[in-house]
Image 1 (cartoon, rainbow, N blue to C red):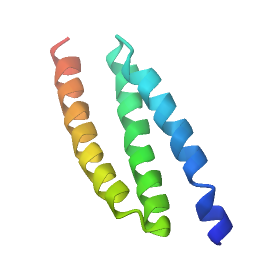
Image 2 (cartoon, rainbow, N blue to C red):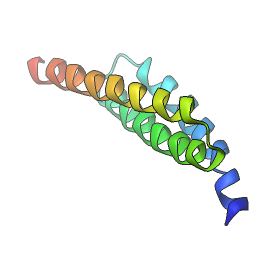
Image 3 (tube, one colour):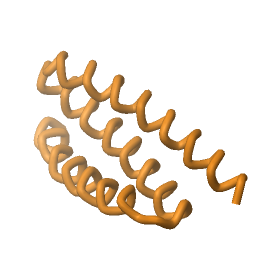
Length: 82
């Protein structure tokens, strides 16, 4: 089991890179996908951090998740206006 949890950092890293790519889009739908990917990466990083006892990383991911949820909301509001 420990081996599988150690491997979480790779999908977390890939999800973060994909999210950053999508967030840079001018299309609100693609930005929404980016926020979903960022939130998924927050969960993956927090799970990996829990296993590694990286408490600062977990707190960072909680803060980043809150900012991603805020971005999701603002993006949704912009999408509704269009």
